[in-house]
Image (cartoon, rainbow, N blue to C red; front, side):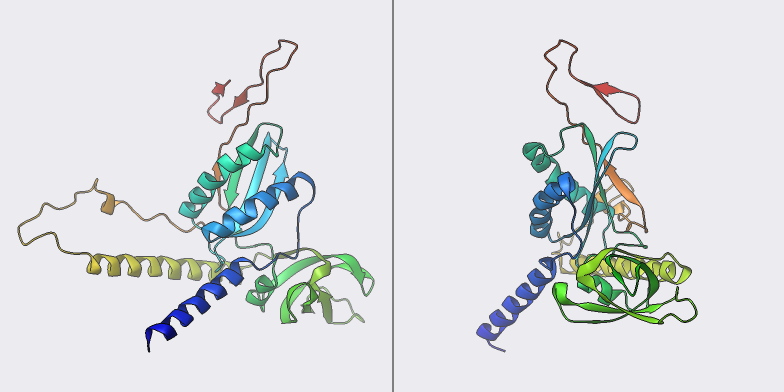
Length: 277
C-alpha cells in the first residue's frame, strides 16, 4: 500500500471517529443545565469524550453533575479527572451557575441513560424503561426489550418488545426516538455481568498496551540496574474502571460577590467541616 492510500485511510478513520463524537443527542436539557451543556459539549468533544447529561441538584448544596463517556461507552477515574480539570476553569469564566456549587463528573453507570441513536443500537436485547413526550397508543410510559432501530438521527424509530403489555395490548411498540423524553436501561443480573466482562476486557487491553510500550522502550544500557522498588511509579496500581453508578466528585466552590449591606461574603463548606472565604 502506497503512502497516498495510507493517508486516505487515516483521514477516513479520523472522520469516522469525529462523526462518532459529533453524533447529536436526542434528549437535551433546559434552563441553566442547557447553558452548561452548551459550554461543556465542545470541550468534551475536543478531549475525545461525549456528553451524556447535565443535571443540577440543590439537595445538600448545589451540585452540577456532568455525565460523560468515551465513544465506546466507558469512563474511568482518570477520565473524570481529565474532564474536571478542563471544565472547571471554563465554567468559572462563563459564570453560568450563580450560587456556590460542587462540580461532579460521573460515568453513565450500568443502568445508563440512552440519549443517542447509537446508544439504542448498542442496547439491543436489553430491557429498558422509556417515557415519551407524546402518547403512543394511549400511553406515554413503556417497558420492554430494545429491538431494531430503523433510520438515522431524529427520524429513527425503535421497535420495543414490551414486557409491560396487558392482555389484549400489542406486544410490540414502534416509538419515534425524537419523541423520547427519557430512556434508561433497567438494572438486572445479566446487565451487571455484561458490565463486569466489559470492564475486565478493558483492563486487559490497557495491560496489553502497557506491555507493548515496555517492549518498544529503548534499553538504558548493559550494566546492572537497581529495581524500581515498591514506591516507584511503575509499582502503582492502575486506576480501575468505574463500576456502574460510581461517581467521581470534585469540589468546586464558587464565591459570590460580597453583599453591600456589610454582611460579608458567603462561605462554602467542605465535607471535612472547614470553611473557606
